[in-house]
Length: 196
Image (tube, rainbow, N blue to C red; front, side):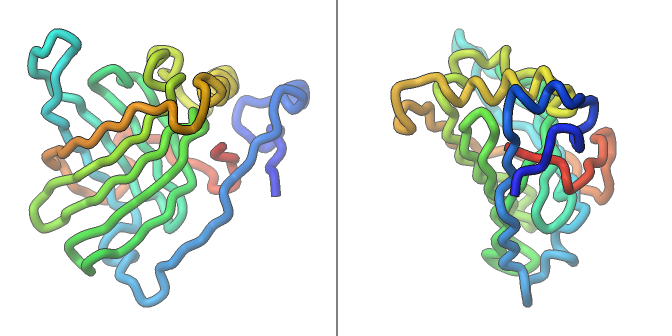
């Protein structure tokens, strides 16, 4: 069921005519899992050891907060996507209780994200399937989803490209720098807000 834009922060009834937001169905497969003990309200800050366009090493800092069993909140502080603040409907999958968890989500830009959190080794492994629009127009993907103009612009990025196969695949590993509970510098969300 779509949630009206009037329920979204900073929105107006006039915005309703510009898009019909959709949220993914909640499919928590967590019964019997250790989500509450391992991930609920957990916040990690991590750095990817990446390279800029000239091949020079640089750090791409990200942070993600497992807000609840079907939402993540994150911010990007380094690399081409720096300046992006977002929240998404996510699915969590326990691989090994207390040690390995996977979180997956689809972004309004059309980008597919999958992150494996290795608790014991303090590492994250990520696969990103960037939509052509998100990758080639990454500055347009900056902003905060809570701002309606940013959200609408991000959705348009998903329309760029000739097909779903028109993607940039990126696999990276990162070192976890901080691991704690709570929002930290990230802003809490209302779980009723639309994510796509």
